[in-house]
Length: 482
Image (tube, rainbow, N blue to C red; front, side):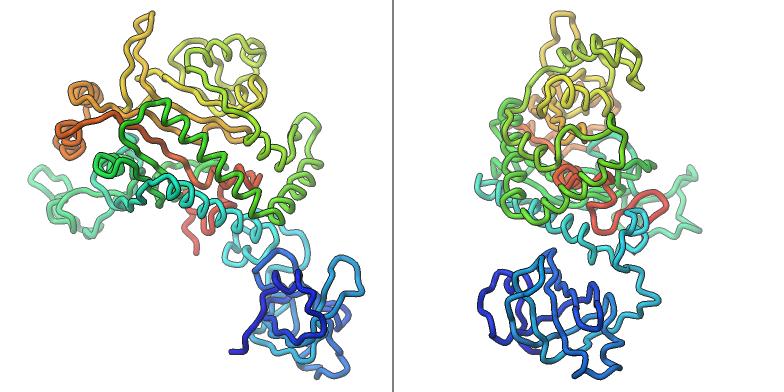
């Protein structure tokens, strides 16, 4: 195949009157003369000028929106506004036709709901070109951040027999015949005859296995797919999503908070430095969207200002108990404007409470610590009871504007007796997690870690409002298309 140049390089080039070849997809074709061509290398198109008098009508008819073409011609200074260079074509070859009557992406504004229905084509729009370039940059930055700090990248199992969260909302993995599964004498499904000879599920977290590796390597992180069979159709939930989960030994809650804050600032800065064109486009897109909303629903900060705001401010750190005090006396609580009113210590905070603390009270990202043990997982380190005898754990949640909870983590319970005591209280069988308990039997050490839902990070950095728009092919209740 002929060597081709990328449009992003040609748009910066000053090598005028040299012959170039580009290949891409037609965005628009005006007046049988001007082709806006995009090859995915950047958001911008390059203008191709053709001499329609020297091209057969049959070829001109095939230059339609969505068609893939190869163009050879001279790179020249553009006489028009909006671009510095264009290509004066000497030859045009159709690589792949696109029927204009059937191609669903026409040169007009499409709703995000419609684009979800054609997720296999939505990458070709400017919005999704920008979103997925930012997603790529954030994923790269995550790996770079941990690599620079000596963390080992671990691939934890996708198929597991344990439920790290204790939520029970997991997808089952089986090869048994659904219509006629083998049964035990008690009439239950006999999983001993299944592929793994036991009941297995898709993982909800790599944390427990990550802890095992941290007890050998000192510092590890996972970055992989996780699954929740939660029947939720909100704009913030997916059935399949990606998680970043560092675990590191000889660390306490303070170390955990610092690592999480450093990571968030690092990856946001990386996106700002490497995705200027994309973020400016998304910033303008969000500003246009905001204009359609009532004044009281508009964002106080633009997307770029919000990202800079997270870099410029140290994250506010306070305990759950202090947060409850602030929320109880807040105006929305006093005036019963919260959907879930805060009336007592022990309440599980909702997104509206988290966003109030971040956006209204402190006006900066917030790290909440020391939650009641009753609303947190069994593996979190138990604090000594407070002055009122209440049991808390060394947990932390990081709250961000517009999102609420971005990161959840804790110092892990390294004391065997305390861990067993907590598992017994929650009826978690010790024999199912014998391997996890072994790390507390053989060389136990203080350690900590957290989980970051990658799509929530992408949602925040891109300013998109629905999590289904920041993953290529979203999986949610009653939908597994593509």
